[in-house]
Length: 288
Length: 246
Ligand SMILES: Nc1ncnc2c1ncn2[C@@H]1O[C@H](COP(=O)(O)OP(=O)(O)OP(=O)(O)O)[C@@H](O)[C@H]1O
Ligand SMILES: [Mg+2]
Image (tube, rainbow over the protein chains, first blue to last red):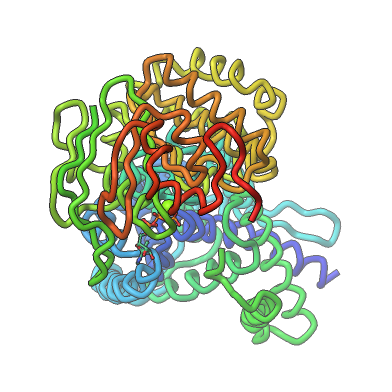
C-alpha cells in the first residue's frame, strides 16, 4: 500500500514535470535554444502567485490566468532583450550562446528572488490546502490532484493551439525547417517570439501550481530545469502530449525508486534515465 | 519583373557568385542552367532573401528587394519551390498547402487556391490527410509546387524540380510548369535536364563558376556547339530525341 501511495504522489508531481518540460521543449524545438533559466522562470511564476495571494488575497485558481498573462508578457520582454540576439546566429552556435545567456539569467533571477522574498521556503496554504480524497488506505491530496488536471488541460490546450491556430502551425513549420517556413511567407522571428512567450507562459503556470501543492524558494530553479531536461530527453521533441506522458513516467519512476532504494535515490533515477537514453541514442538530445 | 544586377555572394571567404546579371520578363519562362556548384541555388537564395548578397542589386516588380526578409518577398508575389523540396514532413499534405497561403495577400484565396491545386494534381486530394514525409518523391514534388502556388505568385522559381524523379513524372511536372506559365505566372526554372528545360523555356542563362557564361533563346542554345558539348555530351543526338545513356 505504501508503494501505491508513493506511485500516486509520483504521478501527481509527474504532471508538473510534464508541464515544466513542455515550455522548455517548445522553446528548444522551435528556437533551437536551450533556456537553462527555464526553472528560474517557474520559480518566478511561483512567487507571482505567492504575491497575489499574500498581498491581494487572490486564490491560486484566480492567480493562475493572471500569472500566465504576466509570464507571457515577461516572455516577450525576455525575447526582445536577450534571446532575439541569440537566434540571429547559425543554428549550430545558438545552443552555446543560449547556455551563456541562460546561466546569466538564472543567476540574476536567483539573486533578485533572494532580495525580494529571502531564501526561505514559501508555499500558498489556502483553507482547502489540507483536503484529502481518501480511497481506502490511499490518500490523494486534492490540491495536487487539481494541479495534475490543470496541467493536463493546459497541455491539451497547447496541443490544440499548435494544431489549429494559424500561428500554431507556423510555429510547427518553423520548428521543422525555418528556411522552408520563411519561404512560405511566415515571419520566422514572429514564430520565435510567440514560441518563447508561450514557453514562458507555461513556466508561469507550472510555477503557480508548484507554489500551491508544493513549495518554492529562490533556489528551486536548477532542480526544475533538470527535471524538465530529463523529460525532454525522455520524450523527444515535437509532441506536447508525449512530453506530458514523459513527465508522468519520470514522476512514477522517481516514486518507485524512492520506494525500492530509499528517499535519497529519488533524484538519481532521473539522471539514470538521462544517461540511459543518451546511450541508447548516442547522437543524443541534439540530433534531429 | 525580376532584375538581378551584378550580384556577388560569398560563403565566408569563398565567392560563390561574382557579378551575376539576369532578368525575367513578365510572362516569360527563363531557364537557369549550369553544372553542379555553379551557384544556381546560391543565386536563388539571394533572390528569396535567405542570403544577403555582398554587392549588386535585385529588383522585383520595379522595387529593390535586397535586405527584405524572405516572408516580405513572398508577400510581394515571389514564390519558390526550393531545392530538395523542403516539405514539412511531419504535417499533412493539406497543412503544407495551407501554409503556402500564409501571407495576408494569399490567405484571401486559400480555399479556391487549394481546389485549384487538387485539380492540377488530383492525387493530392486523395492524399490530403497523409503526412507529407510519407509520400513518394514525385508526389512530394507536387506538394512543393502546390505549396508555392498557394502564395498566388507573379513569379515562380523552381530549383531542380525534376531531380531524382522518374521520366514520366518529370514530364507531368514540366507540363504543369508550362500550364502555370500560360496562366500568367513568370517562371525561373533551374534544371539539370538541359534538353527538357530548353524545350520549355523562352530564354536561358548558363551559369558557370559564379558567372553568366552564356544566354540566349532556348532553341538557339540547343544548337550552340559549346552548350551541346558541355551539357548534352559529345555524342548528343539531335534535339527532340533522347540523349544516349552514359
Ligand atoms: N552553405 C554553404 N557554405 C559554403 N559553401 C557553400 C554553401 N552552399 C554552397 N556552397 C558552395 O557554393 C558553390 C555554389 O553552390 P550552389 O549550391 O549555389 O550550386 P548549384 O549551382 O546550386 O549546384 P547544384 O546543381 O549541385 O545544386 C559551391 O561551390 C558550393 O560548394
Ligand atoms: Mg543547387
